[in-house]
Amino acid sequence: MDDIKSKKLLIVDDEHEIRNMIDGFLRKEGFTRIYHASTCSEAMSVCRSVKPDIAILDVMLPDGDGFALLTS
Image 1 (cartoon, rainbow, N blue to C red):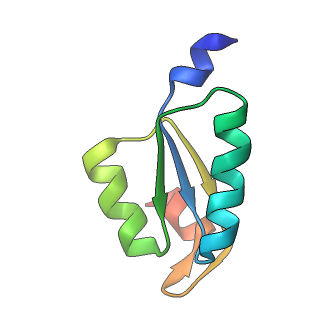
Image 2 (image 1 turned 45 degrees about the vertical axis):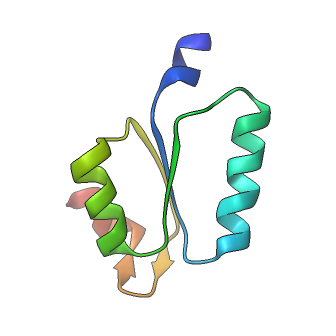
């Protein structure tokens, strides 16, 4: 189970407070490689550079939605 905690996580949400809340929960559980994005375009940029293993996606974003990100 500890192996999953070494994975790179991407949190995509346009609300700063929600991203920070999820980040806090994950860090409390031992995750440390956490990245944030607030838009689809920012998320795509992070995906290209960091190549996250896991993503937590908001459905409604200012420039698209989480479902579209999944298929990109």
